[in-house]
Length: 315
Image (cartoon, rainbow, N blue to C red; front, side):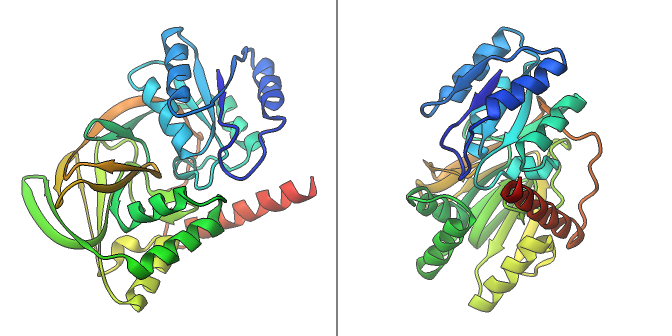
């Protein structure tokens, strides 16, 4: 089954069904096409496919579409295939799936399936990241923008930074209790938010653990350095950051507030029960994936994105 979110990201989905059908037919598969029209549609379509015993469900959209599709496939034998077409594409980028439909289809054709972990916060699934604090506030602001894309996200972040105030969080994990006044708290199954912004560079989707990143507040200069560390993969070496891993955690804050789950803004309670669910989601992944290296991996990904963009312009 191919599920397309026609309004995700900034690019057109024109011609995608024909490309996918042609490639799948060559591999001996038939395609069932569905378009989402609202929240929850992708989950309903993917659930239908899993119950029918489909080999895979290909999701063409952003991290929100991927989340909706994946949550219906957890615990099944129907594999998730990602055709990244969103604004951030965090999970696809973590896995090394190119942000290009034709190149992403090559990953599907390799038929290399890995059973991935996923996380839940108060029962809500996330496959990339869950966050509170500054990144959640930016997600809420970004969702109100009329235009999508990286530049719009940067504008939202800069506007939010001027007025944002840190909050106090108490985190219970690994038999210890930590109370911090933090700029943000990110709970990560995968390594990045999207757009090659690495909030947990060493995160793995197959280790049965969630990477928790607590970022303290600082001066504008500290924030600038933090931004560079996020995009070069050195965030876990920054002295303003506390990183650790846990299979589960409970996070306390003053009350209900803003949060995001895989970039989708939502309001969640003051007590947040976070859990990792191991090896639950079958997902098509590249056969070969290089180990993450600070500076080197972000630079390679940036150059690949540039090549893809140039190819799209001149083809």
